[in-house]
Length: 239
Image (cartoon, rainbow, N blue to C red; front, side, top):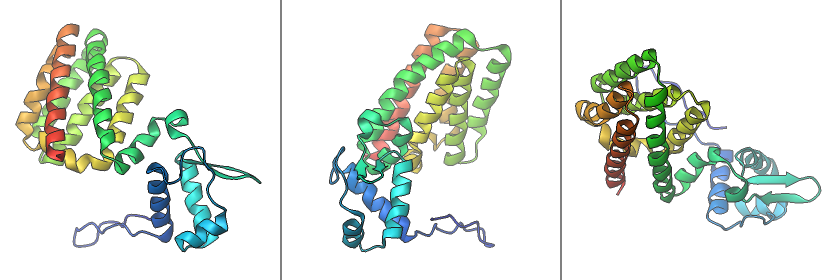
């Protein structure tokens, strides 16, 4: 199994090392998501597939195990290994893998982000406690004080997690986590709105202030504007 090495003594982080199982898992995953192994179909017999990829059956079994855990395969004893219909049976936990496979998914993630984020802001304005409102303002200041784009981006994420918690609905918290996890594979390419800490804080401030004031309509409007603007900046940077 691949594992990232720890920081070396010179402070430079070493690149992760890939094993043959990692490579095979990636090849199989891409073949499945690209439709070369269609949903509902059975994969060729293990010996045939192992020979085709030039690996041992043991290596193939390890890769199968990972893809089964990821929700792309299912093995039936005595029958074979079948490709699952992930669009019908899969859950949101597949999103990071799908975004990594195809950037097309990020646009759909952003669409959900806009709708859910706007709803969360309104609910937070209606339900936030005084302590949560003070916490949101403190987290907003952390965005403006962050040292670099990566830190700004992570501080911004914490504001949105806090907004979700302020709704008092744990499902919103989990949905927020899911959406952020979905674009983790391309997070480094989505730093454009966070390059300037003060500007990032300024864009987010109307959302926090509307929530802190208990202004539901204002919070929804501010969140919708914020999410649309940051989405546009991020998509332009990807293009």
